[in-house]
Structure formats: structure tokens, C-alpha cells
Image 1 (spheres, one colour):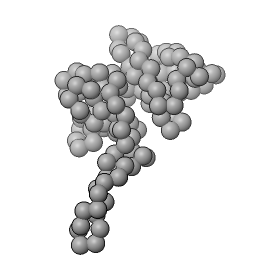
Image 2: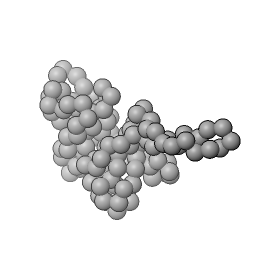
Image 3: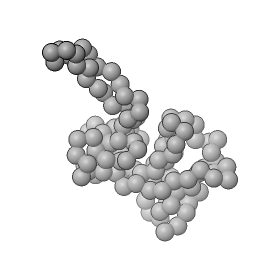
Length: 121
């Protein structure tokens, strides 16, 4: 395993994504909620650029008394990465597909230190 410099901390704003290549892999580093997440930019479904898709919070149904549907809201604590090719959604924090945890993005260790962001491949 080797450590790769991605960028300076101030070059990756909250909500941004930085795609870089290391050891022949394209990797997306995402900055969200003060944390950093790194995944191979490859959707297991059909090879789409998963890290380049939308980032959306989990949609949650609101159910009232007697099972009455009251509408929907968002769970901002469960952000999803949405692959732009076919809409496959993955939990940002784990890389697991939202419906089938056996399908997952390849995750890498990422660290912010000494003014930079580094990924271990």
C-alpha cells in the first residue's frame, strides 16, 4: 500500500469532489459534513463514474397514525452518491448500495493532515 497526495485541504470545499488517478485507478475524494471519503470512481453495476454523480440525502417516508402517508422528507445524516449512468445509489459513509449491501463501491482510507488530503491505495 502507498499514500498519495490528492490536494491541499483548502482546494476541496465542503460538498466538492476531487477525482485523481493513482496506481492506475481513478479515485474520487468527497468532502461532506467535515469528513472525507474516498472511493474508486467505478460503479459496480456497469462501470459508470459513480463519484461524479449527484449527492442526495436519503428520502424518508413520513407515516402517521393508522399508517396514513404524510409525505416525505430528507435524512441529511444519510447522504447518498448517485451514479450518473443508471441512478444506482450508495451510502456516502460506507459505499454500500442502499438496497443491497452486497453491492458496494471500493473504499479507500483518506486522511487530512499537514494541510493536505491523502489517500492510501
